[in-house]
Image 1 (cartoon, helix red, strand yellow):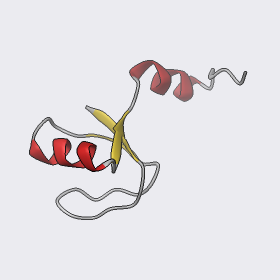
Image 2 (cartoon, rainbow, N blue to C red):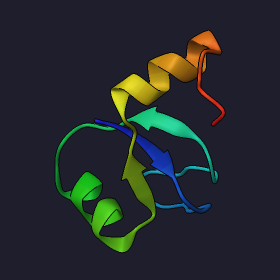
Image 3 (cartoon, helix red, strand yellow):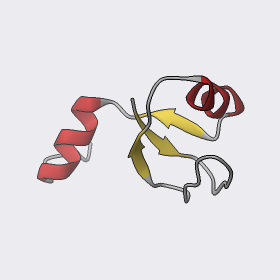
Image 4 (tube, helix red, strand yellow):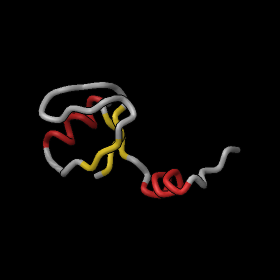
Length: 57
């Protein structure tokens, strides 16, 4: 699952706020999601941002 860090954290997985990364399913992913340290990245949003076509309404 592609996720984005909501804050800086360090442990089994370390990420900086705003960093996006692919994490495998499992207990670490579940723990980070339940703590709110990471959020899933919408695949459509990610591809639009990469192309620079994100709408600014």
